Length: 310
Image (cartoon, rainbow, N blue to C red; front, side, top):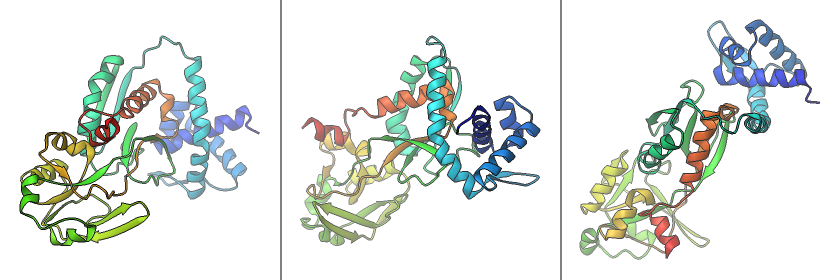
């Protein structure tokens, strides 16, 4: 049974999991570190094992603690909704929110939305990092992050965003002088360019209905910068696999064309993530709701928006 005492223990546990510090967690929940330690000890007796590994220098979650935190995410979200309902409807979210965004996706998809976010919530301040690495949200004190690909961290709560559509593209200049390209296997005879951070690397898997064709290419150019890769493709260097939000405008203008359009590649999932319970803060909830609403809307110039409009 979720008694008031058990709820206090769980709230304290979630605070320690976020801060990985009993002192900071105690300050958040409004008790002393010794009282919080007793609450955690009581919780550990209930669940049948330790939820934290503690040393003189650091605190970390055990496997049992990670499982408990994942299960408690739903309770935390419910508490956040309850707190929001009890709060004044006229209270304006305020404070600093730290965002961690994939570099190119963040610049092209999220950056154009930040002015509107700040206009809607003028008392919020944003600290935004554009980086393709996966930040540790707890260690780096990140409030909200956008992740591309599968989510593996059980401490995080996720909100799905529209997937990325990637497609093969080349410039008319390149195709005019290149060998015929009618089947995925023909890519082996073409100059291909690669976006280095892709997990699939130089192995491109194309799909048409139930048919799948994995093709291993030998890139003449590999880079971790999608904008540089786009410029090389426009210049006629070869064929690349790029995201819709990177090349939508160039496709519309005719500077690039889609090749093998009847074939598709897997669509990476995109998720907005945060540590369980972080969305209880009105400033964080405001950012999550605004970006979630706006990122779900197609943007002019994106290849996927053009397909939908057609």
